Length: 151
Image 1 (cartoon, one colour):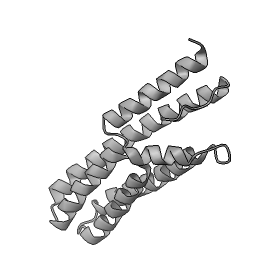
Image 2: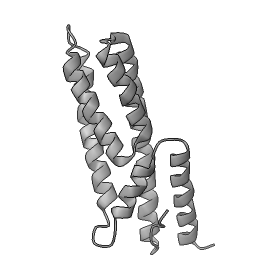
Image 3: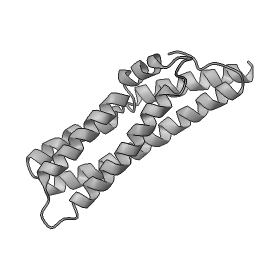
Image 4: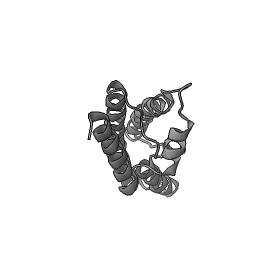
């Protein structure tokens, strides 16, 4: 098998494993379908915006929990935004943590919220590194003169 074929196989296997392990759901596949020759960077651009938003939201959440009195309404708004943006790119495990986080917010459960914040940071950094690996694979396929396989 040639290099392009190997890379394409790797890409398909890796994407499949991300779905199987619950990192990404069908929404990510929908994003990939929207990408074409006229907009070859579409997925990378959308996901990069997600990364920027997420970094900001994680900082906002961390500082919200450093206040003497936690503003749960503000925290809930940040978590709601995080849930929306993670849903929009198909980051399923991040979205699932947000769902639990919102429940603890509504209950004003500081300990539960703190645990969720740690989980959120963990899941976010995991999916970020996995998506960066996926994008590197895409770049290698393109550099080798191939096309990124449709799933």
